[in-house]
Image 1 (tube, rainbow, N blue to C red):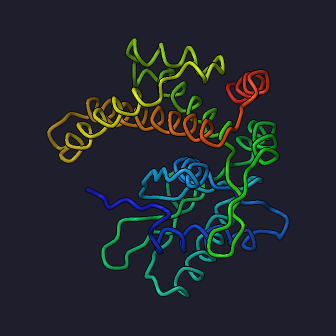
Image 2 (cartoon, one colour):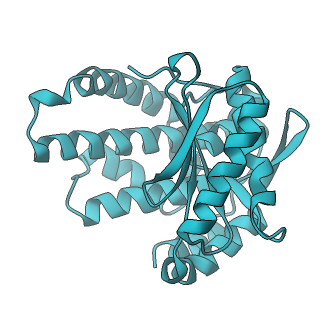
Image 3 (cartoon, rainbow, N blue to C red):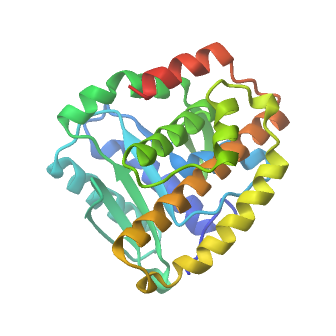
Length: 264
């Protein structure tokens, strides 16, 4: 199994800070933002929630070519190597990636990239996300990351996409959960019960994912897709609980409006 990292790990904090410094790899005008599981962890960190992860995902507020992506990866590689870590870089999964190889650590920094058409389609949604972004200081660097609202909205986007591709079918419990979330009825969500359930489900799925060679192609796709759903619902529950502890209210009307924009 992969080792996973949190904000208690020096390597993780270094990767996060140096990866964010990569704004300078573009034209001096572009903005980088942390998304996904690391954004979840940053928004929860003051509450001592540590959502472990094996990667850090960034996005940039512009369309990028393969040349731009390679330039970003090379820039980050040099920054990380200056900190004493051995890394490799390349293009991967519709973006660019810098992977740590020091001491066998399986950990990487990923830049999710948009081609011109994809960026134009997502431009309105991304503009709103950057406007609502939160900031946290990590190793002297102000890190911009998705707001709690946008973490939740993007988790819903991914689950909707997986349903649309017929890779998953939500069980009744999950559908019940989403009936509250999509209507921004966060006060009705029992995060303790949900987290306990998902930790058990994820633990069992981790065991079964250790040996995917036992499965056929379709079964593997189904296993991985369901694993992503469980992880995304877990992140949503963490966000809701962190917001409660911070007395941070997500406005229902604004949430529903931004969710509608995101699902177009």
